[in-house]
Amino acid sequence: MAEIEIRLPKMGESVTEATITNWLKNPGDLIAMDEPLVEVATDKVDNELPSEVAGTLIKCFFEKDQVAQVGDVIAIISTDGPSDNATNTVAKDSIAEITPSNTTVTSPIVEAIVAPLNNEAKEINTPQGQGKFFSPLVKSIAQKEAVSLEQLNNITGTGQDGRVTKKDILAFLENKTATPIATKSSVAAPALTIPETKIVAPVAIASGEDQIIEMDRMRKLIADHMVMSKHVSPHVTSFVEADVTNIVNWRNKVKSKFFETHGENITFTPIFIEAIVKAIKDFPMINVSVNGTTIIKKSAINIGMATALPSGNLIVPVIKNADRLNLLGLTKAVNELANNARNNKLKPDDTSGGTYTMTNVGSFGNVMGTPIINQPQVAIMAVGAIRKMPAVIETPQGDFIGIRHKMFLSHSYDHRVVDGALGGQFVRRVADYLEGFDISQNY
Image 1 (cartoon, rainbow, N blue to C red):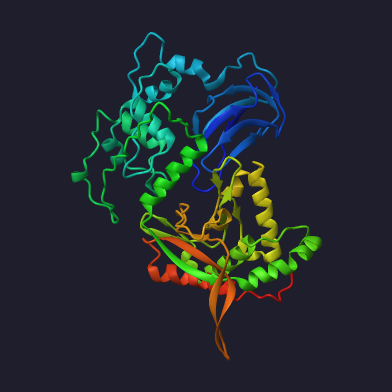
Image 2: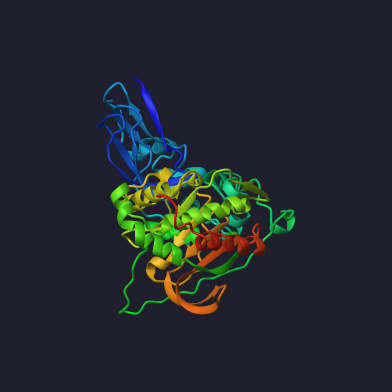
């Protein structure tokens, strides 16, 4: 009988794990090639994974709400028809062979596998990772194994940006008794060190009349990602005011004809992105990422655009190779990604690979904002609301006061690699491109 292993595929840059949210097939069910097999969720997007082959689902290795790493075998499909040995999810019979029901579990690795199946496991406070970012899976294993926060912070991570992976913490548990982990005093300081600050979140106590709302999965992931970004990158924000009167007047003039000709609504977003792309070409060191003490200068210009979901959460779909698109191409890409986001039709690739991000706080009526960098990028720009403002207009005949359309640009950047001169010059150059917008261009 031919049995095919179905592995969790790579789901985008920096995505190393996914949560199994729903199995669409049960062991023993027939499945066609490309038919949806399982629903998974990452910190970027929810998605259905199709079957790579046609056959019968024999075994599922993960239960609903469990976390799998990229490359893990999540299921086995037989291409020779039904099997009499089809088993239930998570291969509980395999675990039973390792650990008889009447035997006390002593191996830390076995405990890490069995603990999630034990509904009576004792609750232990989960380390929140003060000083480091830890994935939900790592924190779950730490909770089950009573790994202290100090021990967790001292584990050397082999994942991206030094992140502690499942393999790292399991290796620590396996060698816990034989090789005690080194204390901070016995370890040579790395080239870049960040003083550890003990931060204790205040405890909020609800009264009898307060409503308690549990965060949904995406909100928890966003919260972890934002805290990690603020810890990793020292944020600096520069502000510039731009006169976008020409853009407003041009759009008002052409938007009806633009739709008749191309079937697309022309918004301000693709115009802003076009200016950002031009500025990145002028200042390519904004289009970088940091890996330890090295800088990765990106060859592609992939612009992420923060988009509101119906749930109120935000997601950042990415326009790939934005520098190769003209204004019409950018308009089509913006509209397609925004519509797919609102209708929950984004694919994992749609949210991966971004090198710079723009967020439109003006869509909520905000004048400006201080956005948080979307790791592993090093900068993000917020565009504020466009407002009619009195302004001094300089002419050869003298200065006078006129009504102009103005907006603020807020540029947050990682001060480890982007100094104030570069960060400030970049946002000023974006404003210059907006103010010099060619109102005679063909569309």
